[in-house]
Length: 266
Image 1 (spheres, rainbow, N blue to C red):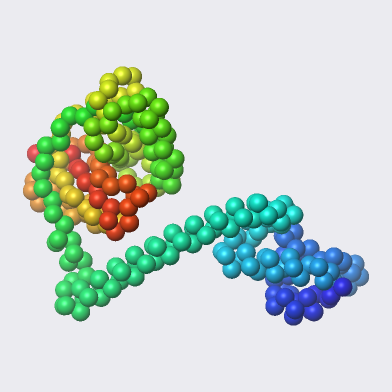
Image 2 (tube, rainbow, N blue to C red; image 1 turned 120 degrees about the vertical axis):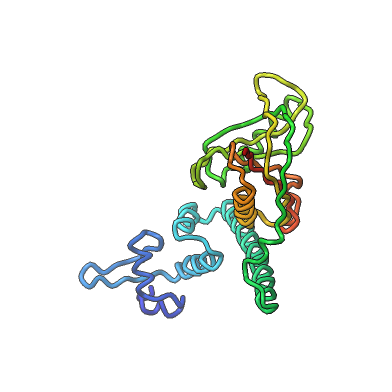
């Protein structure tokens, strides 16, 4: 067996960390001397600590690693877990790539002597009359991360009932404020058929803007639209909504096209 010091040297994991892994039952020593409290490890445990290090490099949490170890390193479970983590990291890389592009654009703006937020001036807002729509809908209090699940449920109903869409999907935001963990959202698709699953979305006068780019920048559009509404002497007259002209699952984030609508009245 190896003392905790030797085990630490070989694995290049500090003794303090090894003691912590013992405390949380992630990696317990083979033997602990009752009198001295010294910990001793089997040589075979080196493979386990190396696996822990590898999974930590992949950004697995200690709780996630514990589940894998408790499964006796089930290879199928490990493969599924690593594939999931790969997707998460890929998404983060894409987000950082978009962030770097935005930083480059902002630096170019500053180098030209313009204000950083001057891009708001390029956002166009106009007044439009939205016609009445018959919509298949699903309204829920949801976490925004659940959006994909519920839009999938809505499209499942659309397909199962063989409804006839008349336009792209939309989301109506009924919550009075922004709460990503518990938001009152209505997902909808305009369709021809009318039954107990549908309702009429009435015609309304709206301030509208067409935005192309990642959804993370929609707040800029909202801000510009609210300023425009105030400057033009209008007031809000209903829940804002978005109509999606592109599918985010098949479209590059910087090519997403969203129409944003704010119902207004004088």
